[in-house]
Length: 352
Ligand code: NAD
Ligand code: TYD
Image (cartoon, rainbow, N blue to C red; front, side):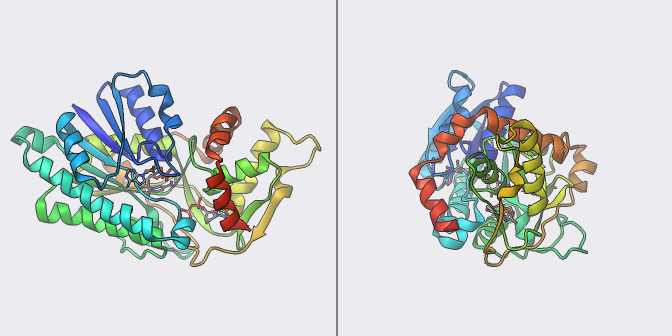
């Protein structure tokens, strides 16, 4: 049988597919619309792998998705497909509503129709695993405990509101139609193949190009940082042993301010790729205008996943960030490929 992975050419989706196929011979169908954030190069090492099939398409295309589900006898859907960048959602929310909400709804309906037609055993084994974010819980105060699965949703950005809406749809399809769903709310991921619009790859790119490292506001916003391969491992475990209808939070127990993240990054770069003038990359840090509605703090309580499924982090922030920086240093061609004219337009719009 096969799993269908949507958004598989994006950052987390591609890491998940690459990791999956090193662990399993179960086939993967990767479905991705190849928006600006999707990059087939992320999956190029699988070009000759007979267990992997790539299809370009939209999660909202019910005919296409229904055909794929039947053709490959899909036994699980892992839904990563989304518009994922908060700053873009502030400039232009439309695509976030279309993909993250309407697209998710259409995907749920395609899954439900297919699942209804399965025989009893296959029906029991089927899973719809939806990937969501810690941002749905909204901004925490500094003294609040980290968010757990029972906390209320208080999304503040168009992005997080659209993810929250999709989580509610997924929950409703379980409660109303008993579609066997699982929801995973994860903290900020970092690692290889992340598009350089997000903080860590953006700062690596700018550091190497001698450009400013833009810190929004006072740089004291806290995020919980999770190495992407620890996330992949959590998803595999949840798919295998997670209880149907449940939500699992995945985090790194690793709260850092934006400024701390960028300073640590600069220290690693100073060591691995010292500047010819002997100065530190930290000299390039520049404080810029804050993001509207910028959430001050996200933090995830991952104890349910640890307690119920035995998942454990494999990377610390130091080891994960070092691996990430090394990957970007060794993959300058990947970076040069994604930095298109369209990307320059975005940088101009956001940072000028
Ligand atoms: P990404 O932007 O790197 O990748 C998203 C992928 O989805 C791209 O390949 C894009 O082409 C594809 N896509 C977009 N619209 C599509 C559509 N309509 N049909 C099919 N494919 C479509 O995002 P990411 O960082 O890899 O995030 C993946 C998922 O994880 C998202 O659902 C996101 O909300 C969630 N998430 C991300 C983070 C993070 O730190 N990056 C944290 C928590 C949750
Ligand atoms: P980001 O990587 O965009 O993820 P998210 O907004 O989903 O948490 O941003 C992480 C943090 O870094 C967030 O607090 C915003 C901040 N940030 C900057 O200070 N400068 C930047 O150029 C970017 C992209 C983010």
